[in-house]
Image (cartoon, rainbow, N blue to C red; front, side):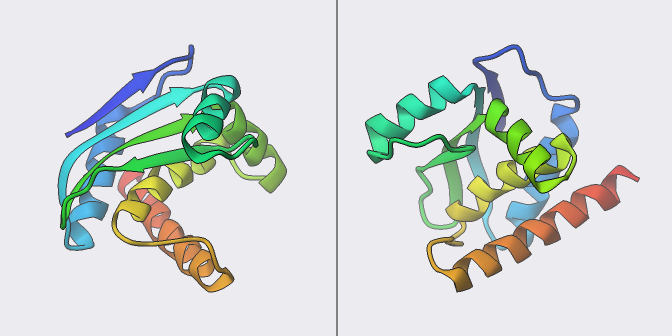
Length: 140
């Protein structure tokens, strides 16, 4: 089950299609969907979590807390809508594409994908791109 929670005025346009897309990615990778909670917030909210739980005094777009058990995917994914908007402008992509990228990024972490080394970052980006392509195909 996927739930979408809002700590800001932002609201997703189509929760159901996003839920179906994420579930499909999880299943296609050989995992099972447990409970994923998305929490959409602002920079201040996410910065506080970053400092308190990760001891990083920086702004970030996404923080994921993994509660997965084996192949059962569970966790909380916090997303700063402000950061996503700034990053979309910086990377010259649409807000929705950047938002979907960070949404699936957290889920990919739950499935074992990492992004610390350059090689891991390349693999993560490749998996994000595959997932985004699938979402864009399903929208048509």
